Image (tube, rainbow, N blue to C red):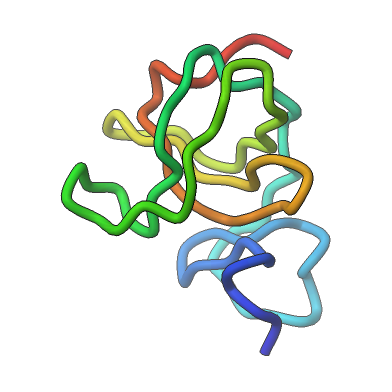
Length: 92
């Protein structure tokens, strides 16, 4: 299986680039966005979840899902997979 820290897939959704490599209910093309303001990238959609790293305003964020106040996708040049608060997602 691809490394989930750098490849976005869950049971319900996966990056379309992973079709044929992982099984998910749905696949999506990431939407290129930027971070609107400094925010932590977290392992899960919870303020108590471990922080992977801090993201700075203007960093790239490839959005795959945005629901219930949390956005999920790839962050920064290292393309780390994680969650940020929805209000931290800026326009492309």
